[in-house]
Amino acid sequence: MKVLVINCGSSSLKYQLIDSETEKPLASGLCERIGIDGRLVHKPIAKGLDKVTIEAEMKTHETAIKMVLDALTHKEHGVIENLDEIKAVGHRVVHGGEKFASSVIISEEVIEAIESCNELAPLHNPANLIGIRACQAALPNVPMVAVFDTAFHQTMPEKAFLYGLPLEYYEKYKIRRYGFHGTSHSFVSQELAKAAGLDIKNSKLIVCHLGNGSSISAVLNGKSIDTSMGFTPLAGVLMGTRSGDIDPAIIEYIMKKEQKDIDATMKLLNKDSGVYGLSRNISSDFRDLDQAYREGNKAADNAVQTFCYQVAKYVGAYVAALNGVDAIAFTAGVGENDGRVRELVMAQLSYLGITIDKEANKTRGEEKMISTKDSKIKVYIIPTNEELAIARETVELI
Ligand code: ADP
Image (cartoon, rainbow, N blue to C red; front, side):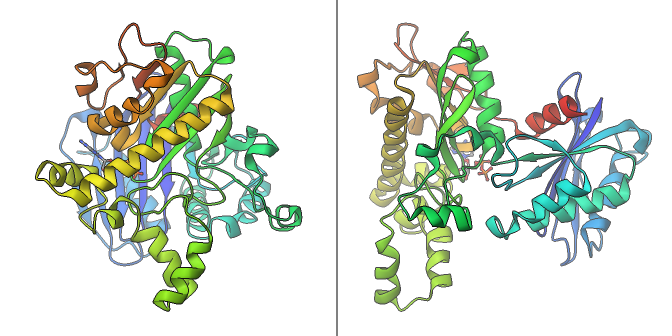
């Protein structure tokens, strides 16, 4: 079955058309600058052709979707004959609040329920909904599924998701830990169990999703029991540009010292902090930081060392949360590609009986065991594939 996977942002829209039998993408692409001018980059993977760039006015997401569908059915760079071949659409939705603990078939009631979570993700959910509406208009008879970033973590127990605030703030405003990257943590934990020869129903796994945004999760018997991101994706380890966990009183202190208002302070924590800020603005990209470190830059090394230390501390915390661990996965841009980051994290965990296979750790972007055969805990690189995970969920539901 051919499934269209849509990830819609406020001015961009990413897509993949996936064949659910082979689990391979037939085409992928990205619409950018929607509402500004408009550019579609389309990659006809099934035809083995180079990507094509189509510049055309994209006033609305409806126009963007229409251009995507035209590209998919185009005579030269299309990969399907006609739109009837698309049997389902899977939409990534960032926040499902406490309403969605799993993916759902989209109905009017579901759309209303997603709308009611808008307050929790004011930048993302409204954009996701625009994408859903635009697809419904273009493909009125095709079933659609919403797959939530937060859903996988809805199995967290209260003791993991409550903050030490007056309980009425949870009751009135739903302030609690939600966690994000759920599709990735779910997909990677399943693949990790398979790779390590474990029965997921009887396993203790830790997934380190380290990308531009990073989060760690503790997965017990296939269910998330804790994760490092919180009420928003700002929490947990420091990231590309996000601060991660800080003493909340720092916010007031910065506001007074720098005479910043709350918006400017939040921007500082979201956009100017993390490894970017800590490296004196060298970069948020770990490739640049690695190069700077190799050229002797102390601040770049500090930033990466701090990141790895925080990741290792979360892994340690989750060994406690799980009361043990069978296997650990590294995934996403940094986790799949940056051998030095993995080595620094693993070196901090030798007390668990983890030993690194330095040769295997040179691997990039493919599944690989990177602990030695006699390591007490198995450690793997497991490439994440959120689009495939969304396609799988979509097929399962329809
Ligand atoms: P996002 O959170 O945006 O989905 P990704 O998971 O794609 O991010 O990760 C992007 C990050 O991965 C980049 O910012 C970069 O730091 C890192 N990265 C990508 N390739 C490499 C590489 N070869 N070596 C080290 N880091 C890499």
